[in-house]
Length: 400
Ligand code: ATP
Ligand code: MG
Image (cartoon, rainbow, N blue to C red; front, side, top):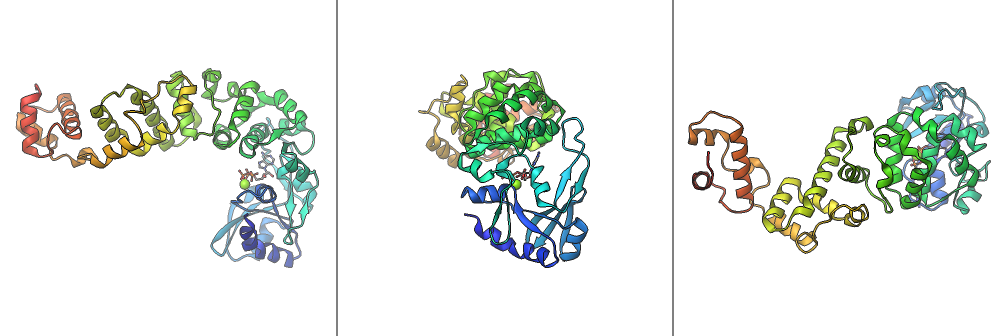
């Protein structure tokens, strides 16, 4: 699996070598290739400096130049080419602000986090495995390169990355590595929330999340992370992979925290999705007739509702009320969605102006309420979606 991606990138290694520098594939792509997992992005490590790489290739993007990374664009694909580097002076248990370039592959892989991520591979698919990474892959073991305590104290994100790989790869954490995690866990406080969230997203949706999530709880990791530290995370049980947004929706629905999602510095879209899912989780169990369900499908959309239905067992495990499968299931939701008379408010054949005209009354909160009533009546089929019918229905049924 994935060999095609390496084949496509071989000419890059070739070019670098023709210029008398070394170049290797490295990191996650080599690990996944050895494990026969799907390879996604390919990272290349080289003895050439960014200047030297830029001289060799026509099309480059200086994406992370200060860390030694240049993107080489080759046949329409982007490859991250990073100069061999060593890191110095870790300040505050975070990534060092200073890196320096070296000409030696060994030094480069030595600064990498785990043995399974520190294997390099040349253009002939020969592996350079200085830290028994292949053995660890065979034993399904996550083990730091070098002394675990030292490596975690240099950069505490590695603790979370280790747990993330445990979840994604279904690996075991080496004993000394785990002990060092326990010792250094407080240093998580020094990390930026953005870096933490990147790893949590991968961890929570990984195949072995059950074990790695329970490690997160045992290690007390959440007590050192903004937002989560204000919540009793022991209440939230996750045993099967789940999307990040759904996980947060469960947290919000169950724990009703006083803290704000903004602390996670996630996008507005992610925030609104979380709130939407949480709303659906709350509303679905309260539905006991078809009209309510029609309104729910109209308001929240069948795909979003279906996504919440897909995790009913996780909601149940978290003692959240679940939807009645007799009334609410994939089939009923599809049927209702297909038969909705309108898709959005814009499809209504009446607007605020029409109602103002009809009632000859000044605008106010009553108008918004009335529009919502009309919308509901149209959605559940109480009234036909024509201006005349709607006005007649309003006269007969609504007190203004
Ligand atoms: P994925 O398959 O999720 O991309 P990956 O192992 O490629 O996993 P990346 O975050 O893409 O992870 O990092 C690429 C490589 O850079 C890693 O395999 C590892 O060798 C090294 N690396 C990344 N982050 C760190 C870190 N905090 N400390 C040391 N090495 C790191
Ligand atoms: Mg990667």
